[in-house]
Length: 198
Image (cartoon, rainbow, N blue to C red):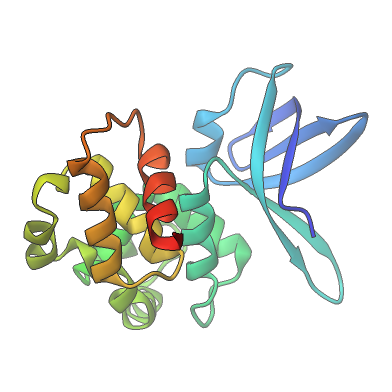
C-alpha cells in the first residue's frame, strides 16, 4: 500500500499529475484544489496517497494534506460515490466549504458541484452530517478562543479522522490557549493529535 510519493513533477493537468519518483512515472488523480498548491513542473513535491485497489485496476489519488485525504475517504463511504466522484466533489469547493455545507444541510450549495444532483446531495448530508457537526453555532461558541478559521480547519480534520466532536474541540481549544503561534492548520492539527494520543 502506497502512503505517499515524493518526486519531481513531470506533468500537471487540472485533476491529474505525473510524478517522477526515482525514474518511475506515477499517474495520480488529484483535486483542482491540490493542483493549485503544487509547484511548477520540474520541481520536487510530495503527495499523500490513497491507493485504490479493485479486481480490475489499481488507481492512485493524491492529496496536498491529511485533511483533504480524510475528507475524500469519508466521501467515498457514501453510497453511490466512488473515488472519481470524490475527487470531483473536492474540486468543486474547498474542504471547509464542503464540510460546512454538509453540517448545515445546504443541499443547494452541494448541488452546485458538477455531477452532484439533489438526491446525491441529500445522501451525502444524511450519511455524513453527524460527522460534520462542528460548524453549528453552538459548537462554534464552544470553541471560544479557538473559533478562528485555523482552529475550525483543525477541528474538521480531527472529525474527519474519526475523533469525537467534544474531544476535537477541547484539544484544539487547549492548543490555541497554550500560546503557541501556528502558521497553518496542519501544525495545529498535529499538536491536537499529540494531545489526544498522549
